Amino acid sequence: MPELPEVETIKNALSKAIGHSTILDVIINQNRLRQVIPSDFGKNIIGAKIVSYNRLAKYIVINLSNNNSIIWHLGMSGRIKICESIPEALEKHDHVLIITDNGVLIYNDPRRFGMITYCKTQNIAQLDFVKRIGLDAFSSDLTPAYLKEKFKNKSIPIKEALLDQSIIAGIGNIYASEALYHARISPLRKANQLSAAEYPKLIAAVRLTLEKAIEAGGSTLKDYHKPDGSEGYFQFQHCVYNKTGQPCPDCKCSLAKTGGIRKIVIAGRSSFYCSTLQK
Image (tube, rainbow, N blue to C red):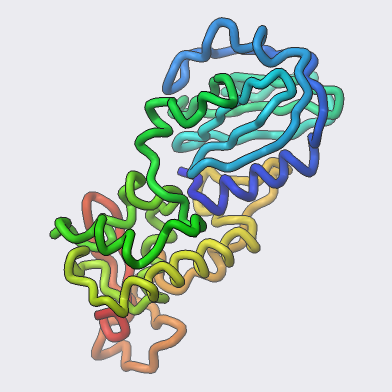
C-alpha cells in the first residue's frame, strides 16, 4: 500500500502535471471499488476547475472551484497515471478516467481496494473515515505529550502502535521499521514503556525518515510507481527494511555473533531491526 511519502509524491506530481486545469469529462469503467463510486460523481466534478491539491494522511484531496473535492485513496495496488490524451487502448484495470483540458488522469487498480469519491469541501472533516484519522506525522500537534497520552495504556509493541492510523496517520510498515531504527528503539518495546527522552527522538526519527523518502520519491518494492511510470528510490536508502542478515549502516558488530539485521513478525507484519543498536 502506498504510504505517506508515496502519496505525497503522487500529489505533487498531479499538481505539477495537471495544475489548475478544468475537468471536461469523466469515464467510469468499473465503479465497484472499496466503496462504490457515487452515481453522480461525474455530474459533481465535470466543468469545475481544480483549485488546489492536498494530502490527508494517505488520501489525495483535489479541491474544485465548485466547492466540491475529489477524495482519492489508492488502496493496496492502485496507481494514478497521467497521459496527454485518452490512450487508444486502455490497460486492464483502468477503472476511472478524469479528462481535463491539460491531460488525463487514469486510475488503475488491479485489486480494487482503493476508492474515489467526492464531497463538499467544507464537509471533508465530517466524513466517517476522516474522523478516524489521527494526527499527520508533520502536524505541529504531534508532540511528546500527545504521544505519551496516546501510548500510556498501550502494552502492544511500539511497532504496532506506530501503524495505528488513529494515532499517527500515514506511517506504514516500511517507515515504521526505518523510523524505529533511527530512534534506536526496538520494535518489540511496549508502547507504554518509552522513556520521556524517547518520545521526541521517535517523533524526530519519524519525520526525518518520511522527509528523506519524499525526497527520493517513495519506495518501489512491488506495485508502486510514480504517475510518470518511474520508480521511487528510497528503497536504496533503507537501513533495515527487508535487509535480513545484513549489517546495518551504523553498526560495527560481528555478523557471526549477531546475525545482522533481524526479521520478526509483529501484528502480522514483517519487522526488521538491529538488536545491537535498538533497545
